Image (cartoon, one colour):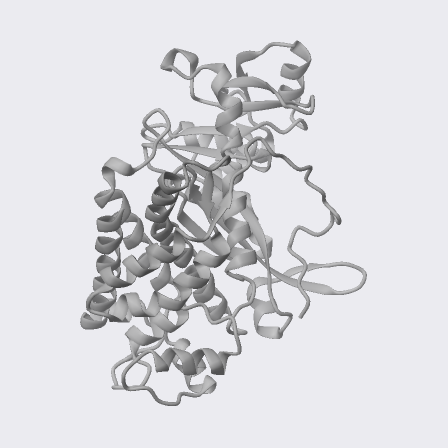
Length: 434
């Protein structure tokens, strides 16, 4: 992984340099004409790194510390930073993350983890709490109750479970909804993936969009008991079955908007699998992974359980990386911070992989397996993230970081589970005190 990390950092650094050197590319990532042309204290390259540093402390302090990392340090105001950042298109960080992903899957081909030849992609959404001001309220909307209006955005993640990387993400207005975003992104699923969804994504259109690709995309969806065909299967007592489902009028109209002409008799076939949970509950999984293709019924309970790691990744972004502590109060700054957090989360995942392998070998004598402490490792990576991209020898930094990370481990106690306590069913977002 050491060579992979070095090559990935080099590719990320090269991407910044290529964009800055190519006026046409720079214009693609600029929101104003002729941006980043003059020689300023905070040019394009430094602006990108400052936002990537994820400024969560007092902004003036973060800016001062940032400039102290360069030989020619100096003062720079928060106002100047705010004026400079509104020139940068947030999608730069989205495509920068695509460079990271391509580097990993290219340079680490032998180490890329798969399940029966497939990458497992868990799909999940999350509400993102925002400050209630006019700009963010207009851009993202939110929800209200009898006491107040809460400004929120909708975030959706496509997460490579086994390799612990966010392969796609989007932040959108709250009212857009997870389903609408997912419908539009189904075409982006690659052929070597299995997409895993929870029951919020259980409907005819979602299934059809996977089956009707030029090469159908594999999926596993947790069934929603509100559908009659799911209820019928549960009552049948069958362990698995191949069933045909037909669209409702609403789904027919939705598919027409997506370019598919269907009628009430357009049936699609899927495989239903009964799964008995440890607490006695019965769940149904919907899939196009068939038994005659080598996908046995007994494998699906553990397969679906792997989906939980996408929620763990979202929790890390919100609780450890403080996603919702945005460094600005505009739509642009929120999107910049969101996509920057995604790429930093992926970079964090890559940089601790080697340390995780070393720690497992070094502490093999312990009673419980160990894992790298995410909280401490993120803190250490955040301190060196700028230096990694500006120094001539990132290898030395990675070696020092590796030695520190393997000393900060936590025991992994297997087969532990805790009931999920929902304190307030009306609130789907993490409480925050402003």
